[in-house]
Image: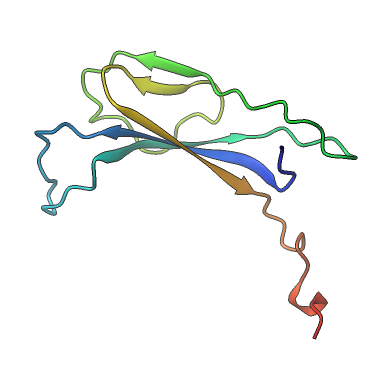
Length: 114
């Protein structure tokens, strides 16, 4: 069911660290999966009236040969087009809803009953 309060989806692409990976400069590993990059995809606004049936959301994926991901930037990825995934790696993708950012959408403190 579409959520009228959600305007976008944050996509986090994570990859599994190799078993032989070593700790970084601070001496700590950051878990089995590491964030490769994050991006955001806007959702189409819902039409006025009753909430329609869910048309679904399609996010394309493009697999690329990447012998090294050391130079992949964790941010600044495009907000349209496919999510780019390196081949030959365990990949995990997280999808998080992003709510509309309207200051008065849910009312104000003064509108609450006493």
